[in-house]
Length: 137
Image (spheres, rainbow, N blue to C red):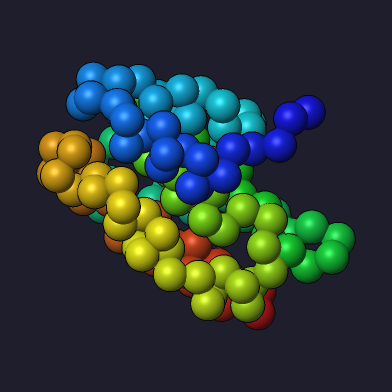
């Protein structure tokens, strides 16, 4: 199993791409997400306020770090949640709480790159991840 690309490596590629290729990069990131079993896609794991369906399911690793499974019924949105997860995946609840997720994603300028209905749920995705970290802290 290869290591996931870092956010900075993805940004390096992203900065060189035109709009269409940026969409493709996001779609590829979404395709690379670890599969989320359908039984975990429930009302309880659904992120509210997203135009597409987005599910996020936290698991706790033996050492206390959090590992998230996520999926979406929209390819671009799935890529966005993949980007969000790169900022927090397999970190401790305290590290996640201290992470400036919005700041880490800011260089991608998603609000100007994508339509507003594709980005409106990002704050809700981040809020759900933060609330999960606080619950496990």
